Image 1 (cartoon, rainbow, N blue to C red):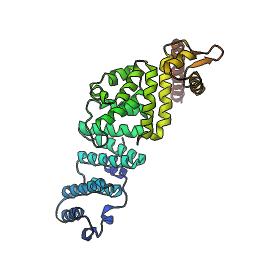
Image 2: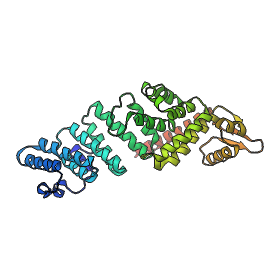
Image 3: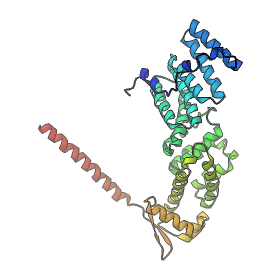
Image 4: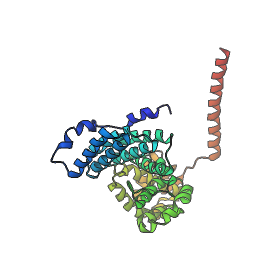
Length: 343
């Protein structure tokens, strides 16, 4: 990556300089005594000590404002502290703190900049604990921007070692892992990395709806799945990170479950399929028609006989077509190379 660490500090989104904002505050009499003492110590450190002491007090002040919900002032102080951070680990710690503020603000642009900055810093160092925290934070960000597969990949990568409590409790982390994984990953991966994972098994009994949601889909108990799906969807609609994507998540989740069901049949009656899902024939007919028209389900409906017929692609023919396309690309490149060599 061409962007150097010396330039990466510019990626930190900084409101007006904290030094300007606090001008004169050190002597105000209406300040919280705790904050006034921190400002006194900061002034003393700036006059008599080095960057290390100044940075530590700036971080204290940032945490003071963060605890009281003054996120702008917290950002300012973290930005000032970052400029005085000597080691890569300290810069990473500050970047992760700013990401926490980004999550509180629900600011994807701020989060994106911090992720870019953190990736630069991790090229220079950073221990596994910091990398795990970053993967969790990036996973939540990816979930916020509807990249469920990438988010699930991050969560599953750190499932065995997740221990951060600042952003998510372990139970919340497991919930998000289940929600992002089921909508985006294949059954084999879900079985190996989720359903059989000791970390999931250790807490899933405390989340009966999530357990029913996950296991009923994997074991093809579709009536149970739809019962749990309604409750999980209500949770998604109310969730601070997922509520804006609840409609998309719901649609993609239904496509997953219908596709899984139809993989087992060349043809099945609408009545039998509706019974399996515990829904009316009319509802299922409308659902399937919508997804077929969108090109999301490989099937067709015979309205006369009331049968759904799967239209699974011929794998041999698909392989042949893929080889032909790749061959055409290779021939075009060879022709361009031949023309260059002739010149």
